[in-house]
Amino acid sequence: MLKKILIADDESLIRDFFSSFFKSTPEYSNFRIDTAVNGEEAIAKIKNNQYDLIFTDLKMPIKTGLDVLKFVANHCPETDTVLLTAFGGPESAAQAMAFGAYEYITKPVSVEELDMIVKHIFERQELIIENKNLQKKIRDNTNYSKIIGKSKGLTDIMDLVKMVAPTNSTVLITGESGTGKELIAEAIHELSPRNKNNFIKINCAAIPETLIESELFGFEKGAFTGAIKTTRGKFELADKGSILLDEISEMNLDLQAKLLRVIQEREIIKIGNELPIKIDTRIIATSNRDLADEVKKGNFREDLFFRLSIVPICLPPLRDRLDDIPYLVEHLLKKVCFELGIPQKAISSEALEFLLSYTWPGNIRELQNTIERACITTQKSVLQADSFSFISGVYNKSSQKNDNIQPTVMSIQNITEDSLDWVKIDRRSFADIEKEIIFKTLQKTNDSKNETAEILGITTRTLRNKIITYEQDSR
Image (cartoon, rainbow, N blue to C red):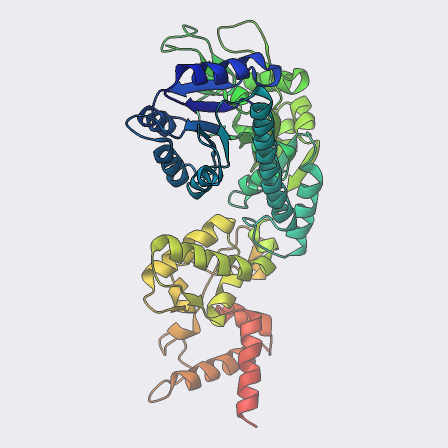
């Protein structure tokens, strides 16, 4: 890994000695070495560069070594510094440590002492990085925080993600729009050994066919009109990392053939160049279509489908993982209120029941938009069922089985004599009217709780809870 080192000293002999040491030592010979003749020049260079190690003399014109140490401590505290001084002893050590220096060296500096300090500092830096990565992996392996839910379907998927992440296998993630395919792809990258390198995302549906090849593979200067400079493609940028090909089913057949070659040969060819470039990029693809069906229709190459789907992951729609909705709602309420800059809101049990009754054709994305709209339009601190009155309808279980059946809602809060002339509402409380509507509807449906709940636009669970309450009140 390339290291960057700055040497700040007003004596040219010291600067030359340090530069010569690093250039002549094989393990340091590829390091980038910068020099500064005083503290002011050193600070200017630190502002424009990120150094791994800085050596600075204590006494320099214009600005001193202590000024340099103060600037580093305030602006780049992770950079290690070593103070150079002609006067050793406890006072110099105290000065160096007080301003954040990792070590100090008394002039004249010996090669052996310098080598020992440099080795020690870089070994320490590597240990710090490894420790951070280990802690991150432990957190991620325990729970990838962006994926919310505890349903069995989601748990099984995350178990598969943890198994495939450490490998180099291609992964195909399918599912309806809004189910979180991109988050699963991100989790695979973050839980893999490639997480130190780039995770490049490209939406195949959002880029015109005429541009997507150059986006993926890059191009040479002059390869086509407008190619004013050689440009690296997404695959090259994702080398040693991962690339997400979102909605890959939108890719045309010619480009599919080129992508197949990339997978097989592990190399790309830039537009305007005949020489292949070797790459080490993991491919993760997503699609909201059934690619096996697209293969049958002739829209997708069968050989590419098989190469992509070495490890297929199919995300269930939100309507098939209703157990996750309470966790998602809790998470989204915190997220939305924070982003909107409004006080934290809660949700009532009736409102949650209402959300559980809906089939969410837009999946998690639709749920997030719904929560955001309810938070904006509801002034109260607790979201009630009527906070979601803008939802067009509640899909009952029977309508989920037939796409042609349109959702119907008959909210008990809106029932009047005009809609049900068998209920008298004059001079009566809302609770009494609601109770009579429920029991008379039960009579008309021969005590069918499912049919009654469907007519009234409430869930069967809500209906049962209300009946239990009525029975308790009558005792």
